[in-house]
Picture 1: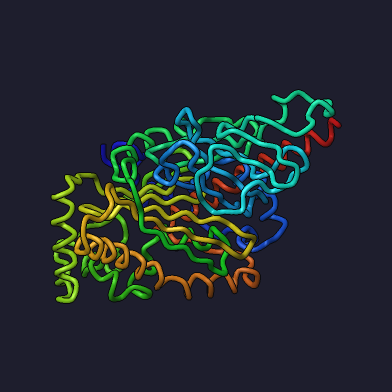
Picture 2: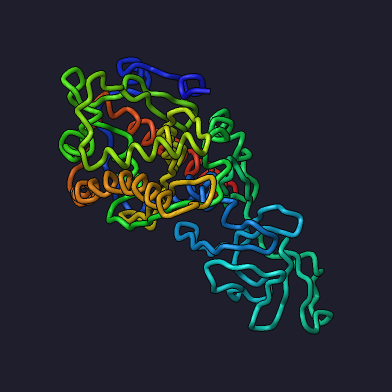
Length: 398
């Protein structure tokens, strides 16, 4: 299943005709009030990637995640029944933090304050002198967060009752991701970063090729050519709030640098040895998740977690289907990861410089080949305005 079979692929002219042209307000990229509405309307009601099942391989395994936009500390834990669940990292007695470690394995979780003890499914197992509390034991289980596993990845939704399951929300993209190495990964290479930019400013950088020839003259040269000096994609794809692109293939790419040839040769050799066969993939899943498959060996995710109106944490993970068997494999994987990291790192200064000017300009301008940026902008705006309207009606009826 190719991206073409999943997304509604449009030419740049068709996409611009569908989603419009012209300037848009710059306020959503910097305004604190807009960010608060966005936090409530988008991030507390969408499926957010927070981990992978290989991090919790056995019953009792857990990882802790600090989710700033939700003002929450989460425990992601595999229960004795094998199910992966997420809970708020807070004792139901008086809110004390249960776990300080970032990861580990426990058969039970006990609050050190008053020793309320919970099972791996979140149920309250015991509490000293509990008969003096006027509350049923079942009402004191850890507070759950909606959790779903898709292609080995763990997604959570902070809505009390999500409107859709994660698989319903992703549609056929979920099935496509099941074919990628991430779905059967046992380990990964990860790097994280913080950047002084709104999450959309940062995400937008990975939705357009307009900047390639200026910011990536060396690392991006394979994607540029006389026929396409900006490396523009040939088509842009859409599926509800999600989007992607069909990249242009340079018919006459420049030669690969001698220093890189050995690494690329080893990458291809390892892909054949491990039996990897997956399509070239580029899915930008709403709101802040980017899934990339670059055959023969590179499958990575890039999740951008907002920390506020002008700051974002990025997490990049490259997935492997087995631990490295020797130093040569470890080196080749590091090479594959570093080639991606180097490209992403080149963008940082330009992205932060863009954010610094957002409060000064009244409007932003997207050209036709920046239609994916416009699509994200409109999808966020639609949800914010609907949320504000619903809240206004509720307040009027109260």
